[in-house]
Image 1 (cartoon, rainbow, N blue to C red):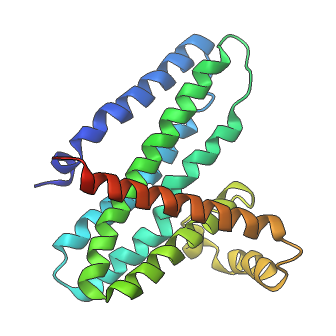
Image 2: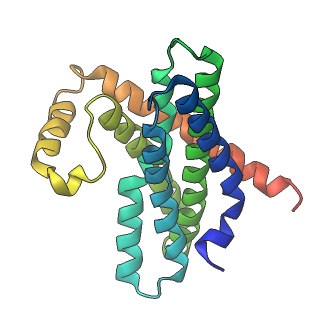
Length: 211
């Protein structure tokens, strides 16, 4: 079963978001919020990486896919912070922008959690259950930190390769001066806990709901 066939039911969510965006562009005659298209594309990358974990017969290739997934996973959740862009603009009701941004955020989060389902299944095949649980918690904390790096310091996932030394300088500043950067670590912790709790809720829901 191909990637597209497996996740074809995501298409209505994507099309609804794109329809809202198209309507906004036509109505306002501006390309405001068009970055949503790029952000959703980035959100899809971790799902793509995680999907092929199940088809990789080579252990090294599988762990490289996992590493790529980990780097891009925060992009799925980062879209939630696009709600910061909500503001009352002329020529369009505020509720329309709220629906557009919220639709994109929910779609991105769903894509992210689906990718994590695949990754957790992969990890359980490789490692013991207590180790997997520790890794999952660490992933959510790293994701929270990645959201901070993207939203406030404007780093992108590919900067790990494109500009690693500058990125490392910023990371060192926060690691070695945690009290000076309390906001960073508070955001990391709270977002990490929140995403972890929602993930556990949906996993439990998926088990209980009849197929």
